[in-house]
Length: 179
Image 1 (cartoon, rainbow, N blue to C red):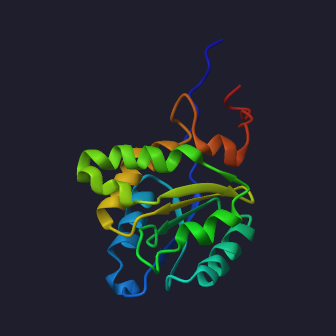
Image 2 (image 1 turned 30 degrees about the vertical axis):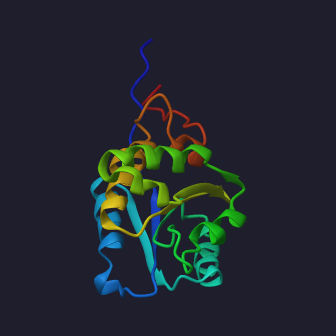
């Protein structure tokens, strides 16, 4: 008996922009993430913009990770080395498990585009209350790099040999039509 292909399973995704200077009207990084996640077939749930403050970030993300319908949070901004950049410090304490390879892979892919400047990215990711949280740099280009180079495949249930959807939704039980 041949195994039928795994169907695409859309995820519910929220987008948070961290910035002391941008407004939602000027948020090209958040716009790009929403466009890409929707083009991939996922559901955009909610968007917010907060200043680069540990407690403001944690407040928004804590509400989202407590919401059973939210499966992924994409955060753009606050991952650099400037004195106000505090996204990793805000998010890492919320993680039940850190996705250790995410930052390393992001920097490897980014190196091809921006060279050694990628060393200044502190991109991180983790699992918090069965919600994936990805912390990306604030540039639109970096968000596209992360989406196209990592997230698009890892948030796609059809990607093999493995993907994060299996982790979020558990092993899929075949429907009567798939048996």
